[in-house]
Image (cartoon, rainbow, N blue to C red; front, side, top):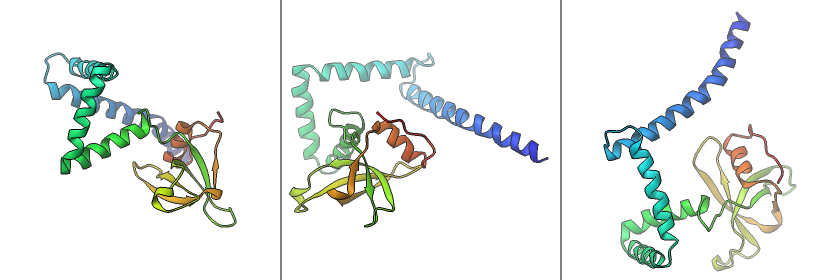
Length: 183
């Protein structure tokens, strides 16, 4: 009976991640497809990818850059829209934009003796504008969550890591289960 339970759990470990991944991908695919209401399955998803890529191409054009800049100025002037727009834009820029913020993985000594450490990402290396000298802003993502904490840490407690930032993020989000490979 014990061996049967082990086989079941091993099967669960294999099937659950695949099933959840497929389910989420199908849900996203159908949701995007359903927004456009086109009769051909998958056409809405493909069109969405094409439109996003086309907008990215056009936004790289000098004329479009000025239009995007104008749109951004307008969005930043509207009270509620400003909060939603800037938060979303800053979040996307932090992960995939030209101003990536999660590209400097660090290990931080949490206790004075350095016995406890935490992994995070430096998001701002100088805080002089806040009147806090010799500190850096370190973002600590939470495991199994899309949240995290921002701490202002003395610079001497922060040590850069020679590891790919995506690997550090995967390590943190997985609760330390996923391995990290040096750069």
